[in-house]
Length: 423
Image (cartoon, rainbow, N blue to C red; front, side, top):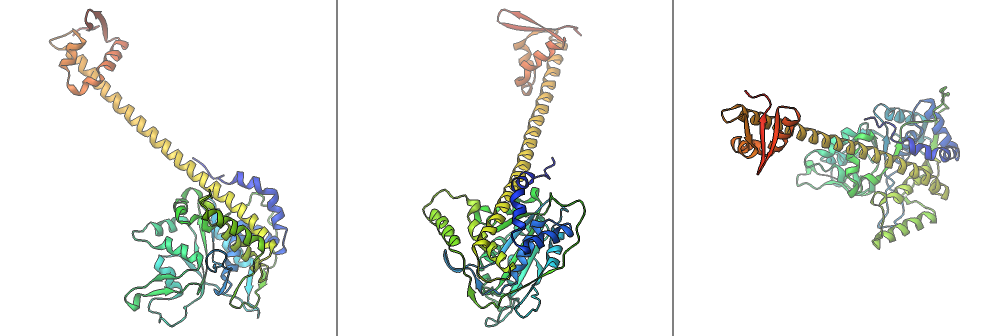
């Protein structure tokens, strides 16, 4: 069953607004043009660029405490497409398209690392045995998982703590575990690290991400397609890489527009009142605010504007469409598999029943060909066959009559059956 066109409807619904989106800022048009020159998807390339933008910012820069405490900028992206559709191309194009430098013009080097166990995340920042009073070994990282199967395998390990640590990573919470032995202790304080995560997701293998919906894992990702239905026939020349200079970051809480505060507060109020809020959108506004902050960073600024918030809304519309199409494709695959299993069960039962009917027919013929035949009442035949055949005798009688092996004779008190060709 081919389901590779899982997002076509989503892309068609967003085609016109999409082109407007890319032209609203020079840096967005640059990402689109660079992606097409490298034959990678503009949306997935933008996702990796935004992940790198977030990873370039020190961990003590945070979003304001609208609900609970200050919130980390840490951001996750699911890059969605069939196998070989271009997750790796998006990462390479993003790396070359935009360079992030500090306010002195020095390249900001963020290590790109594979994702391992839950304990491995904390040890990325604080290796086992780090002194309690020492700082983190590194304070930022971009985690990359090329294939969703890798993440599925890690999450499926017995006793795995990875999913819980991923959720904490998103929020900038304390990571790791307090073990009795100092050599194995690895606790990373809250908001002492910066992290971004990209995962390559094949739609029909996305169960691992959707399985975590009740815990909020699914909602923490921005879902972006790796394909480009409007890719030009002739590949354009790549523009020169763009250099984005960061402001002089100090430990700070970012300023955000009032429209974002209002939307987040209204949504939170609905949750507190127990109103009907889609669980898959439980983190949508926070995710949108993080995307707005990433767009701000990509634009070389330090204050989140209303335009950042609006553009982030367009990104989230595309994310929701991509996530919904992915879930629909996965559900269709599961439904197809269930139907196939159901048909297999029916076919197996029918085959078993036919086998038992055949044995019942043979048993009837054996009785009538024996010393008591060639004509007996149905009740007499029933008594002489093995009990295992009796539930199929009525079918057997009918089959043999239809095939011309028996004739039925209605008599007082029942039916008699006679061989058409006595032995």
